[in-house]
Structure formats: C-alpha cells, structure tokens
Image 1: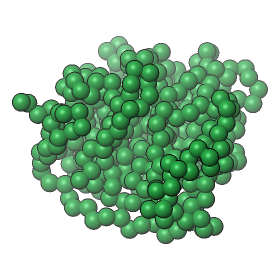
Image 2: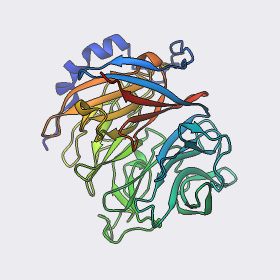
Image 3: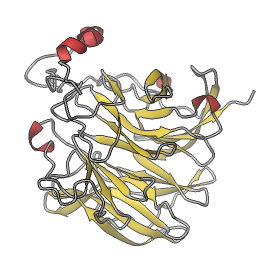
Image 4: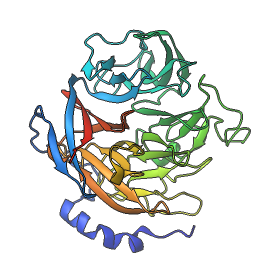
Length: 404
C-alpha cells in the first residue's frame, strides 16, 4: 500500500472537527471535561424509530450491577455477567438477576474502579466441555500485576476447579477481551496502557497484541510466528493500541476487533493472521495533549481499519447481527461506545452497515438520550441485542423489535 501523508488526506475531513472541538496543541494534557448531566435511567420500556425503518423497544432487564463488563450465555438460556468493581460473577435466570453471586471465581483478582473481573466466555463445545473462561487483573504480590485468564468447570450453578490457564507478562494490566474463533482457539486482546511508541510496537512483548491460545491456554503449533526470531509465539496480530472488543463474524469466520485510540483515532479492524495494524507509527488520533499521535494514518506493510472515529467514541465491544428479530439489520455491526470526544455522559450504541464488498456505507447512533457508558453489546440466543452499561447502577438492557 502506498503511504499517504495525514496532512494531505485528512485535513479537509478533520477541519470542522478540530475547529469545533478546540483541540489543544499544548505540551501538557488539558483538564478533562466535567461532562453532561445524566439522569438515572427510568423503568422503561423506551421506544425508538431507526434509520432502516424499524421501530425498536428497549427494556431494562436488570439493574444494580456494579460496573458490569461482559456477559455470556449458557446452553440452559441463563446468562453470566461479570462485575468489574466488585469482582463478582452474577447469573441471570429468566430475566431475574440472582442475588447470590456465582462461586468459584479467581481469588487473586485486583478489584478497583479500573481493574477487576473482566471478560467471560464459554467453551464452544460446552455440552462436552463445560468450561467457563474469565479474564481479570491478577495480583502477583507487592505492586506487581498482570492480566490472567482462568477457567472453571460449570456444575449447573457454580464454578469448580477454577485455575489460571494463562498469566500475562508482568505489567500487562487493565482490560483484556476474550473470544473463541471458528477454529476453536481462544483469542486474547492485550491493552497498551501508555502512548509511548517504545516498546509497545515490538513483537517481543504482549502489550498491544492479539494472542491466540488453545482452550487450555497453550500456544498452538500453527500460530503465525512460531519459530520466528523476535516474535512471541503466542502473537496472532500486532500493532494494536487497546483491543477493547473481539468478536467472531460467523458469516466469514473472521475475528473483528474494536480498538481505542488515544484522543480519537478509534478503529474497527478485521484481523488477519500475522497482521500488523501499525500502532503507534500509524494513527488517525491525537495525543491527549492535542498533538497528532503520528505523522500518517497509512503506511506500507500495515493494515487499514475497516471503520474509524475522529473524534473518538471510546469503543468498548462489538457484535455482528445475524439473528431474525431485526431483518433490516442483518449483517450489520454494532459497536458499544462509552463517550464521544472525551465528553462524559455521551455514551451510546452505534450501528454500521456495509456493502457487499465489506465497505462502510452508513452509520447510525442509537440510545443517545440515555447517556450511558455502554461497555458490552452481545447478540442473545433469542436474536435480540443485549447491552451492559458501565455505571455505578449498571444496567442490562435488551433491544427488541416492536410488533406491527
């Protein structure tokens, strides 16, 4: 790919944005905005018309969650929900949030506002291998910490024999996403926690990478960098900043990723084996001080984003819609957003429609009036969309079609 200079390609696109946002070019980061007033979300349901001509209804299925982070369904129709701040794993049965948390979760989790119990996933062959997988921030003793992935055997109500199957390098921390691919392997997204170009671009560390592991947490023998000098064998793709979401596109078998830029430059990426996504040498975002993060947003040898945001929306997860509840949304990508342009109180859900070549043709913002930090979006087994809001009074919301 021929590299294009940011100034010549993007200047026109960003002129209105930079002028209206008043982005600073100071050497130090500006004070954060206080944000908009956010009223508590009422009992609902809430009704909306949408751009594709469908009316939808949003129900509050559960509330009172402590900054929920992720959810996954079990074959019996119940759902598991992680709470980041409390470190608890909650269960939803017949739309009722169970008061007693699930027992058997990892005991070494660091519980705080920014660290704790994170993602949850279930083994793709759950009927014969009833494993539940949990990612979390693990204390290594003292002030040392790392990300970890644990799994426990589901006994119908709790986890048994829970053990770590993967512990990251010391210093890997904050969020970590999990998804099983069509190949049965476990993909793990590892955050970068600073904007310093060194050493996160390097292939000898785990930060800023998507890792590919077996369901037992080992390195598969067919990983792209097996035996290659300077590359960790667990790496599947690299050059990521903060992989905030991973999902399987069941129509194609591809893994797709949301990636949070610094101050804008958020992305959706289609992951390829051994792919280099360019961070921090390639970015369409600014640093928090206002300076451009990089000199260009394309570079030879790096892969372009499928979609991007400037200003950023703090994307936190993504899900393809392939159910039957919303025919006009078939094949659309839904991205949860926590805030727009660094302004608290602007979280919502975005929908992206693609053409037959996989190119974006339109985008819609949904549920903007609720002003919630949407942390997770998932397609439920009933063909409806479910959302988790990362708030003190965290909500589980369900989007339904409105019958004629």
